[in-house]
Amino acid sequence: MENPKNPIRRSQAWFGRQDRDGFVHRSWIKNQGYPHDELDGRPVIGICNTWSELTPCNGHFRELAEFVKRGVYEAGGFPLEFPVMSLGETQLRPTAMLFRNLASMDVEESIRGNPIDGVVLLMGCDKTTPSLLMGAASCDLPTIGVSGGPMLNGKFRGKDVGSGTGVWQMSEMVRAGEMTMQEFTSCESDMHRSKGSCMTMGTASTMACMVEALGMSLPENAAFPAADTRRNRLAQMTGRRIVEMVKQDLRMSQILTREAFENAIRINAAIGGSTNAVIHLLAIAGRMGVQLNLDDWDKLGSQVNCLLNLQPSGKYLMEDFCYAGGLPAVQREILSLLHGDALTVNGKSVKENVSEAPCYNREVIKTLDEPFIAAAGIAVVRGNLAPDGAVIKPSAASPHLLTHRGRAVVFVSIEDFHARIDDPELDIDEHCIMVLQNCGPRGYPGMAEVGNMPLPPKVLQKGITDMVRISDARMSGTAYGTVVLHTSPEAAAGGPLALVRNGDIIELNVPERKLHLEVSDEELAVRRAAWVSPEKPARGYYKLYVEHVQQAHLGADLDFLVGKSGAAVPRDSH
Ligand code: FES
Image (tube, rainbow, N blue to C red; front, side):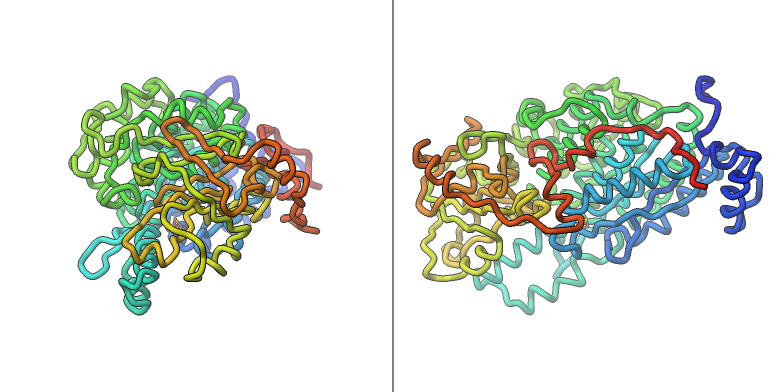
């Protein structure tokens, strides 16, 4: 039903004027062949597209956008597609994360500055989801997300093989002498054989689940493969629905409430989701003005059972998850832990959407009573090594290493790590703790996914596949291991991580949420006095980023982007 309080559409501030500027706004749009009546006051829907051949996971988004347009037209709206900066995880250096906030600025200003009444966000590869949600949240128009969907299962030599996870496993086999480089590279064409994003429960799939869990997409958004025509139908239905949302003036802030974020945190635990979701959800909440902090992840999620037997924590892949029932089946299973009344973009509550959702395969989606892994949500550890916290994903770690005391082997950069890790003379064994410095938001810059450092060959050759690793970096959502990440404050900001030296003893105790460096306060004060801040970038976006990026425990947004400004119509351009 139309909202009578808001009868005038934003787009009419451009197209509804009978003056010189109205002529300009309408006439140039018409050069694309649109008839005059497209501009007669019907809802104008922006389709925010992250298509790029350099973001292969989003390479099918032009086609997807056409299905959204069908739906918009069917519902009486007028769709206008626009591009924004696209971030390809596998190509962009030094790391796509460096540009998440830049892309979010592009999204925010593209929405606010244009004649748009509602927005459909096309999101796929890891960072395109948070950057679009962050930018759109700062505008707070009626908004729906459509994810691009995962690739079909990788198939190599008759077996399923998962994006990322398979790469990490096989490259370790090469380093251990169990696989030749030729065999390894022969998998390249087999692992990624269809359009879509990584088909493990990596960051892209996790974030697609977060979009659905937050109520920001239609149900079943997360799991339909990109190649499945149900994905196109979902896009078309989204096009229809966004027009209704504009008429109802149902804005993002009515969906993205504190309850929605609490639901998402619990779902992240239940799906064995990526640690990257922590940073992204904190940043999105920050834009929306919802109070959410790092400890909420531990408080709300750490005791929630993981139900999904999906890589990297388990065996199966996203295609299997789809056929087993997808996210609604998980939401139904943990409904007692969710805010069932939370509103979603289809105008229904979570409970209304999922209470009858079927599960077709209990090998893939386990029950709450007989979970895949008990109490497996992200844990937050603290101590003199991480005063503002660090995170670990127990479902991807080795249980016997969750309580461990060991000697630090320190690498001051990822280049230092690569230069020394294969050296047979390196003084390291499986009981040591690998420490990586200067890979946080300011340090890298951009907080690269390098926290899951490969093990030294001499350890791998003993058949050992995991060691404790600690850094201020992130890790790929497809990765696994006993890896402590996001240590805050980071080394480059003068955090205690910068003061660790070879031979120091570190204690990790995840059950007690402890990360302790066994060095006296006096000695740490001496080391701190001698610490020299790394050189800062001299110009450009790198300079802006390093000067303004917040620490990981706050979401690593730029400080001046936190919050929202709404979408009031800006002043005239001519
Ligand atoms: Fe794009 Fe994994 S690299 S989703």
